[in-house]
Image 1 (cartoon, protein in one colour):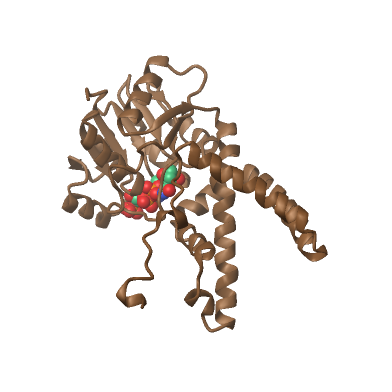
Image 2: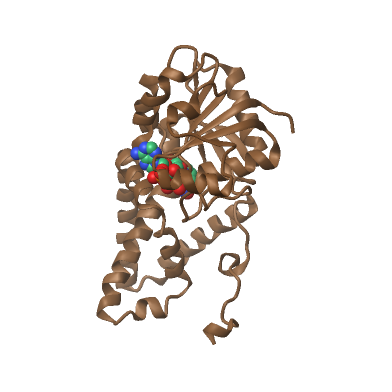
Length: 311
Ligand code: NAP
């Protein structure tokens, strides 16, 4: 694959940046990759595992002279990091990010972008519940969507280059307007995470009462909630603080639906419950048909019952 950027700088070296690095190396879509993380511990880990061709001791040093700089830090830290690297960005370079919320990142980063630098926010819709420099893998973005959120006046050629870059990392690429992105993600990701956090919290309270039976006999539904609720606390705190309106809008609708189902249970309205679950089952089928998940039972987990320690 031919290179679309000579040098890429990754600022923040967690799950997303490390996956980007391994995917860049797998594809050869870019030349040298520099990296920076806030703590010495993360920079040391990155050096030890060969994450980035060069790990720098400041964000500015990593970003200096890069053709593409990608901010891979929590949403709440984007503005501070952008201010730090702005003076070293070269004219013609592209500045992007991978933040899960787009309007807040545009508001925080936009004012720092120097004249002549192409600012193209982005969001790869791929992740796991793991975080940190050792959690990344080259296939994370394969067949996942990456949404680019360019402003109307953004240089079309710069947008096309970024699109080619993400396609090289394995992603399907689309463009979207920032506020629409935030609403869509509130439905598909942010509100579901909050619900999972809540359910695990409720079960934990109950677990104390029932001497941890909730954990011991944890079934598929609850286990899946615990996986989602194990996601990085800093990242998710920032998502909710910065995508406040859209998340609250969706949670309001969620609460109304929950009350309706609660009433159906109370009044014994089986038809309502059956119709509702039939509709939601169709959505699952649609996701599988779109290639965004497999239809393997239990989310494709290996059956563990046969393992000796579980006997
Ligand atoms: P992560 O694994 O927790 O890594 C975050 C990185 O950012 C670490 O290298 C950390 O450095 C650095 N960092 C944290 N706070 C910082 C600060 N105040 N200033 C400078 N650097 C800081 O996170 P991630 O999962 O890769 O997420 C990164 C971004 O991608 C977030 O904006 C998130 O919303 C977005 N995103 C995440 C997912 C997902 O599922 N995880 C999916 C799509 C998009 P230290 O290790 O040195 O503290």
